[in-house]
Length: 240
Image 1 (tube, rainbow, N blue to C red):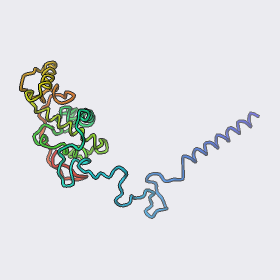
Image 2: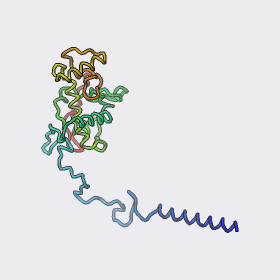
Image 3: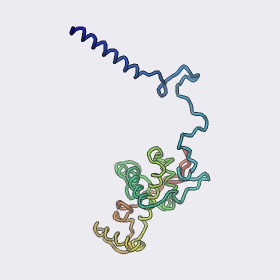
Image 4: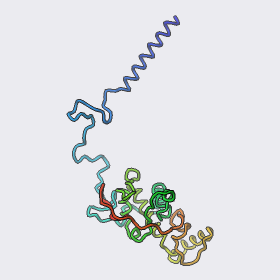
């Protein structure tokens, strides 16, 4: 009796194993699998001409690329600029940009300190003159050693980062005398607390306590911008 029970159990196990393997090897073609049904020998079929995936039409090139059809960089962000946007921009900037450009945007991030070629400083005059759309364009298309971040950072976050970069630039070159009274008092208190002093007329961006939201580190002078490269892979700005 025991032998018969073991035999039945073994047959059941074999039957179940065969059923599972049959479900695993389904009668379908996997990605890049060969096929003798089509003349080109591949099961993957090319998309019809001019096919656009749902939600990927991207008619507003200014929003998606930071540059319109005429090649003009977008100056005004196409989204509402408020504190929530700046906070989001700071968070995304520190996650994706600070390792090269550092938290103050001087181009001396941690990977640069460990031997990677210096990144551009956002505080050089050429980049200070660039509109927010320029930075969106570089994040979208990439430039020089910097790859495209389009697959990692959605358009709304690219604009948030670009706006935050403009805030870093403004903070770097703003004197304490130019700040509103409440902001100036807060900045001087922060500087005093950091042991930096709070003398009138000092550059607000030259100290970590007032280098923009989050209190980035000292804003040193970074290397000059890189030479322009040939355009490719989508619209891109002239300089980095």
